Image 1 (cartoon, one colour):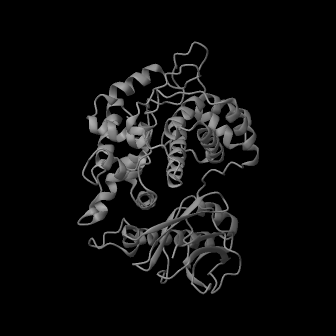
Image 2: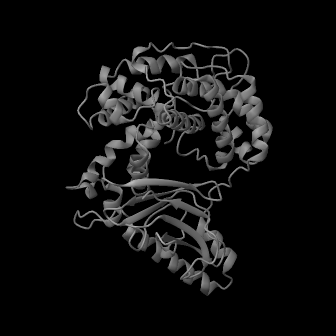
Image 3: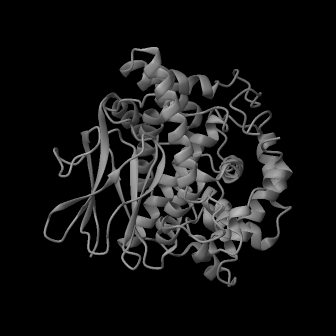
Amino acid sequence: MTDHRHDAGRDISDVHALSGAYAVDALDDLERARFEAHLKACADCRDEVAELQETAALLGLDDQTPAPPSVRDAVLSGIDSVRPLPPRVPRHAGRAARSLVSRGLLIAASVAAVLMVAGALLLDPFGGDDGGRPSATERVLAADDATRVQSELPSGATATVVLSRSEGRAVILTDDMDPAPNGHVYELWLQTPGGDMVPAGLMPDRSDTVMLLDGDASQATAVGITVEPEGGSPQPTSDPIALFALDS
Amino acid sequence: MSGERPAADGERDTGSPSATPPDLVDLLKRSARGDRAAFAALYDATSPRMYGLVVRVVRDRAQADEVAQEVYLEVWRQAGRFDPTRGSALAWMMTIGHRKAVDRVRSAEASGRRDSSYLHRNQPVSHDETADTVLSKLDARRVRAALTQLTGVQREAIELAYFGGYTHTEVAALLDLPLGTAKTRIRDGLIRLRDTIGVGQ
């Protein structure tokens, strides 16, 4: 826990202090979403959380209780219908190898990948050193009226939308999201009270992301994610793979 | 995290007379490949600890059974995502289990079913020694000794959070702490425990 330059003069400074409460699941849903957004950008906190979770796991040492045989039976028959997730593999490597043949294209792709990473760093909601003014993402996550909606993705991973009506914006957090199919992107949508889907941006090609949605979310009734052809679409061309209903 | 860990994945003698304890990392890896026998061995090696924790948090046995079942299905699903460089297999599993147990008591609370008498009850501590435990009595003693190094408030705050499933804000109210300070007590206490026990060193 050393690099706290981005703390200066902000409420965000408090966020590091949540590592212990996070490790023992003592955050409410919204705090958890906020802290997980912070974790994506703070390697120090990730390390600390890992150690504190390791420590917390020792707390129940005296509480050993044999589970009823019925639980064992249910577990061992239950796994038949659950597919183990694939291990995490480097994404760009896999995609480049699949989709690009010529060496020139590969080089172009790696340059693009570097630019994307650089862009991602610049857009990093907590890591940026912009003189201490909270970004729009931070303002949404820290807003008093922020609410949080989770939805499961087809892969079983969970994505979270945090909405602040007063800020009029929404932020999506993903963890472990599968890459979009080749030649496709994930596009975000804000649903209007009239039921129209308004484009809200293309998701970066990363499994873990914190992204501010484009557009005014103050009246939105839902956030959706669809799979669209590269470059995105003005209107959804398929059913959403995830839909987050927002309370009005 | 690297190096020696107290909750080492069975690299160490548990003190049980029977056999070498199973290597949980290996069992998890094989589970990720769909090896049901490995998963059954993983279940047998860890379920007394897991079920003990879930029962302590959830209390209601019928619900604890459901939660324990969900936890192991999740462990099976996620086995391939376990990263041994980030921590021990047991802690990874217990983290999944604790999260599910706490989520269950909170949703039960939301639907009005929660038993709120935690503070008025003396938690009976079960010293069940039957199962193939993956942790030695030595470890349990070290943890108990480390707990005595905490301040009373740190220990209470951690226990209310970890076993009671209360949020840090609720813990602050339960302990009459100024708003926003329970999270600091919890963190300070865990850091002291970590350093006393030597986690991650």
